[in-house]
Image 1 (cartoon, helix red, strand yellow):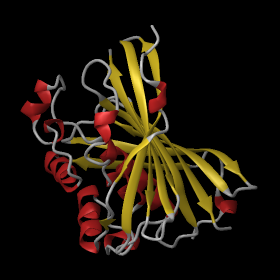
Image 2 (cartoon, chains in turn blue, green):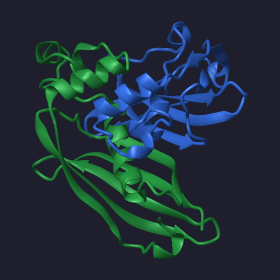
Image 3 (cartoon, chains in turn brown, orange):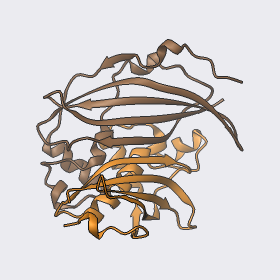
Length: 138
Length: 138
């Protein structure tokens, strides 16, 4: 059975978040939580690459994303790290639905929604692209 | 400092054995604004059909990112430019995880190396798998 959704949904950016200022203290806390002690990150001037995935979609983004079946789970991410995130940067995030597809495996049918987010800094430079795969069991 | 000439297909990263406590998992979740019970509370996680608390997918991504950036080293000479992860099996805290990597490709024209990375549990089951791309300055 093909998954049903409005094809006009694909590629539309519904919301760009307000800039979030990256504080050195926040980078240090993130490093501590992750067990990151490398001197290049633990001081808080430059964030470790994985810090890029901590930025959240806008509050209203998921109102536009269709739900399929039961509660969704995080199936994985593809992250392109374009340039480092530094303390003092002001990061915005804009997201769109990149694709929706269905897979049938041993455990049943699953619908995957891929949300692509682009992070930019205060200079309009791209910082990272994140493709986030959400999986729903139908 | 790492150079592309030092990279050999078949070289390995790790194994690194890392114990992640429930407190560390909760701390990471709270730092990142992830308030779902599955990340903070065994009972709440069980109500969602899980065996107990699990690590946020982003935390697994962060641990694998750290495996690669530790391999690159603080002296630089290379940069993690891409990391893709697939969350195959929920990762539970209060266990010792094993992190490993294996260089599968090296592209001289782009001075990049592709590395399969993964997280195993104590039964050598691969919970999270991924691919990292590292680009070298020279």
